[in-house]
Image (tube, rainbow, N blue to C red; front, side, top):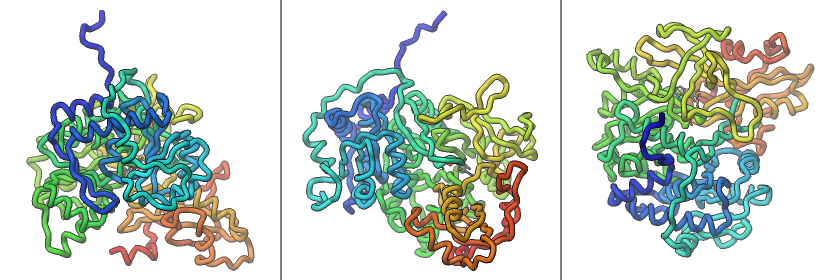
Length: 549
Ligand code: ADP
């Protein structure tokens, strides 16, 4: 027997119509690429999203076709979030920090039809425009007065012209909630980047769970400033959460330095923010050196890489800002765990509570997790045993976009997603990341592909073998260290090898150091044993580390 309740698809457009109807006066404030501060309401945003939905349709975008963005956090990007997904297209947020070769590879793989971009990314768009195969329209996210005069982009369109030329009457279509809504690429551990294709249903369920009190704890009383980019797993879902709960949103645009952020926090009364640890280092340094404080900010979500315990302490002790440590992945939409306290933790001393906060936290409702050993047997939740972390749930990837094969691990008759993280879980269900089994480097919250760096080194005529591993860095958490075996009798220098990377990758991917060794340990199948190298270079001091402290 079925239940007798209304059948209504969980669609992203419903978040917007809810926000417009019930929180229409709530503000969205953006620092724009043009340099000014833009201010309007959810009601205004909804009307412009409808205009943009009409414009996207007029550009010929069909159901489930991809609409790409290269944009900072701002009100126009927010409009596109709803206009593209809401109208049945797929929003594809490209990461502008990647090398142009990677951006165009990803745009081709996604078969993007239209590209919307902030003016800061014009040089990048000019570089990829002649190569991308499927993009039919390029739209500069600005007004007529700020349009570039001589851009090398074919048929460049102006965002505000599209808005002005379109009606604000648009009925958000109803369709199956399993329809694709947005697409993000992750660098993955091997081979090419992989697309994670979220559905309307997965996004809505993630939004419900993220907003809950023991998750991100968001309410209409909050003023949320997502520093985490909208091209990083949909700014961890905050543009959706804000509409669901009716919270005021503040977007920092391109200005992510401590001074600009602090000004916005104070002027707009921000209560909750979110970002990777590196961002907060800059902010804390600014606040500290100018003797400032936080008037309204009470909580900040920190994730993307492990939050240093000293940062948790500084935020709490000096500024009375509570750090909510969170763990997630692109493949998890992204939230998996959040470190909010259980009642019993409140009775602990401050020191003991800091130790709890340094963990990645408990699973959100909807996420199941387990740790397994090398044989696939489940390990106990005793806070001691460490194993490969597997997860499952309705907002966790089941297959990569146009990927081959099944990425899941099958046990207990179910499919589990292998996170590539190694973790322990304690008796309270609090998870702690202890290591990473996947072969990647994460610098300031952004992936660096170790395989790409190795391939370039191996292409150097004087290199016999090269392995790239993550070395600890006080500012960026991890930076690439290249371990190289030279061909016999070759006098290759560190500087020459590093110069070889110029123009081949985004400059921030260049390894911080090169170590020449006699041999790299190999496994039985001839694979480089990178975990052995990581162990050998565990305490390696990068030459770039001292200047960061
Ligand atoms: P995001 O954009 O949310 O950072 P990614 O898919 O780029 O997602 O990266 C996910 C990976 O980042 C995780 O598998 C893990 O290795 C690392 N990570 C994310 N959050 C944390 C955290 N709080 N502590 C340690 N590592 C983390």
